[in-house]
Figure (cartoon, rainbow, N blue to C red):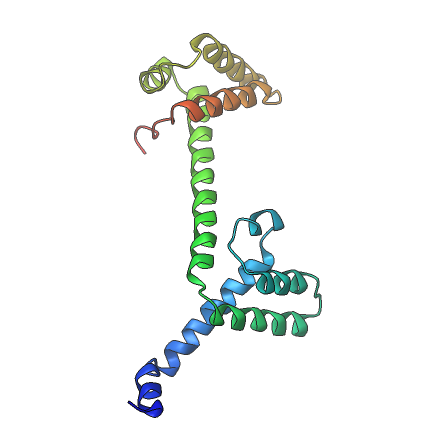
Length: 177
């Protein structure tokens, strides 16, 4: 095969698809530049790409920043961006899981404060290792605070207790939701 035949075979990708890929990599470049430095350390970047990202963080002018983002996107096109994209998606997934866990703990706290002993019994069925005495005391104090319109110190303590329990044994989903 000649060089022109090889080029024709490899250039089967449509112009529209190349544009979509370029826009996706530009978005990835934007995410990398805006990502906190502590999380950026967990992403597998080569030295030149890391330097370009750090340089882009210091640019304040809109046009210059956009040009630097395009440069980073071009660098991503020239290397294998799949591991980088996968690492960014894993970070996002961990964040979403952490937020969902936090919401589940808040829902249990609110349900225990508003509910009856039946709610507590449901929780104890799934989390038998929890300190029942501390839990009952926190619930009782949180109910008093709510009735007297005081600051929610006991509710915070209840949340912490539930969070510690969730670390050992994940809290069950809220019944009826």
